[in-house]
Image (cartoon, rainbow, N blue to C red):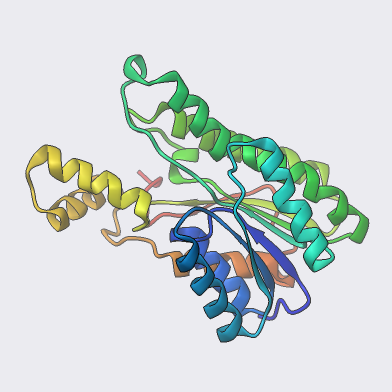
Length: 261
């Protein structure tokens, strides 16, 4: 599927799911604005590698998405550089695990800001251009935790449920145009965020890392296989293409059966 002539912003795309999505969009011919944290030299090497491999422009913006004005500037800079933003992927996310009575309020605020509010701020400035051109694709990376809950994840679960709600509202507001707004709800994906959770569990239990990873899958993901960033990337490309035009307002599970039981 070709996305030549399209331009995309992918938040949180210097690693994990976001990087998988950015690579897939670039491979399909889209220009891409990367965003995320990391070592400057490593990010520049990644940007150059994607440009050279796929023959498209790949740029980088260091926006801290906990700051609304920086989230807005990310989209505006992409519009200035590419001339438009056709595809917006709201992927950036962080996690904190604690019982609700022990949950630090500042961590709640940070999780909500990055996982939910940032998507509102990028969306509100991207939609006008999409409406003017009668084309747009907004993909919000929610989670299986946008549909179900787990203990000790109050902020994350609240934010991901909020992302699903935001997706449905914006889909309704843009339904009469060729703009689609969908949420992808992955199960366990082996990303730095999930690896940190596995490491914490292994430290607490004393079990080897890989054994703890298998136990994590066994608890909630019937396939007993991690979803991959490449699979999420391929699905994103499909939703961004013409065959995805009839899908909007959906919360789409890619979770190895996580939410089936």
